[in-house]
Image (cartoon, rainbow, N blue to C red; front, top):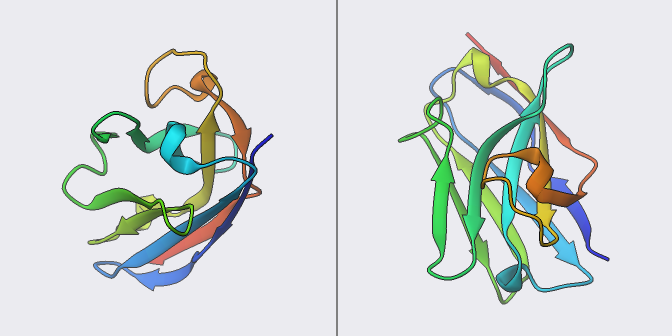
Length: 125
């Protein structure tokens, strides 16, 4: 079992930055594929960024490429999402996720079995 706790959400102005953190326990993030997803009311949860083992390799949704960066710190067992040049459309609940073996693609929610409780990000124009 993997437990995930997100933090770092809040409010920002358009063009600003936020950094989300995902503290993991129960397993090492270095051995699992990890990702950030986001969801707004009435919409599907969408993959934003993923970091996979073996490299590490990173993947990003087209909507955030060049603005967001996912990273992990193995020593603290934490995954981060640095969000720069924020836009109002980035406003959502952001969730950290950990994979458990199945593979449907790095930004496909079916690849992930463990989820945090989410942290809200609100970007104003």
